[in-house]
Image (tube, rainbow over all chains, first blue to last red; front, side):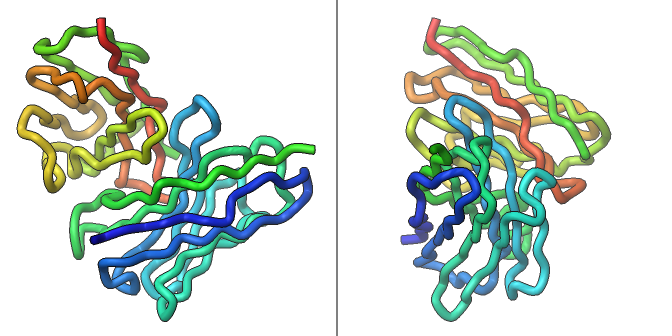
Length: 122
Length: 108
């Protein structure tokens, strides 16, 4: 079964750090671009970051640039999001999503994890 | 950055009725537009990609149309499980991969 499972969320104080993980299974992880998307409580979807298949290229939303770092370990089939200098406005459910980019599947986010909640509060 | 505007914000319909959801882009995205469905407490699910292609396993009552700046998601006859929030996403000019603000489809 094709699956993405996030972990690592929790409660953290403003200014703190957290590392999210996204474990992939059931497909050739190293062939796909991957993304992080977040959703604040009661709000819409917001794209956060993306990484290409071999990890050599990354992009970030302006709101997280310089604070968040996306990475991947293709040997471990795992995607990461290192979040530093966290703010209250970073509070959200964080989803990882697979992106075939039209090469191995549709040009869209075709598989999503169940999400992990990050709460930034004192 | 391309901005996507969805309308209406909320759509109230009954099962069996036809639903028409709109997504307008601030500049042309060609046909690089996707639609997602999200139910409460669940992750988004891909419905439509490249404006009009149904994703694997998506029922035929869901269809997408449009190109350039104006797009439509149509649900031909609403089933009870279709009441959810729907998001459009542009894949033409990234980063960022922008989403619309969503349309909530609720039971009338």
